[in-house]
Image (cartoon, rainbow, N blue to C red):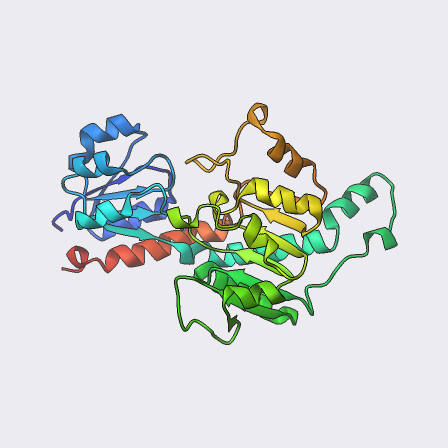
Length: 318
């Protein structure tokens, strides 16, 4: 079989992806290259497989003279200059389908943990403290859940929430006609009038920077629970703390933080500011290290999704 070109694995990926790409006729190379080292070799590759090691920017794209596609393991594309890549006829692929179920299950699991005081009840029992009435919690049943952003993650969440006997509303500023059997499509104003729980599932784009801010939260008729599993920079953290302190936000679940760097790592402890310390000390906040989409199953799902998309590229089919 004539080689279709050489693919570079910039980040570590499941070995099955290399096997399947080689079966499609590609040569695969794994190398722990720095950005500058890749810049020197960039003209050798027709494809990049990447997570979040570094940015695929204009300089690297200009140097990648044979590049035909970039495959991002995961949903977020903020470390790739997609517009410039597409101007150069480089196809940009991602795999939000791969961890949609994982994110949806995380949202429901963490919400149940918050509503039912599971984290603190477990801690108390381990200390010999047995408080039943004090740990009386809430049910999802009967609540209204507002989903902001109705892509793969939002749809998976709505599907899984549908068995909880709650009302589910969805708002997506980029879409029309997306109502389905699981959600009622609505505008933002109606969602703000009705929602008890708000789950954020929007991409990070420049016009989504701090989309969830003080005014956005103030617009809700009820005091709400807020969940963010999308990207940290869509939420103004200082504004969230303001509303946590005044009770407008009754509780928050944050799997992502705006302090995360390109490698999806948070600030080290010595660099935390007052806002981060507030969140870490707040009993009504659950914090996790960007793991909503991280399951053993999602590893293989991401590979399957991207292999399917690569297989359908015109130069691969021919």
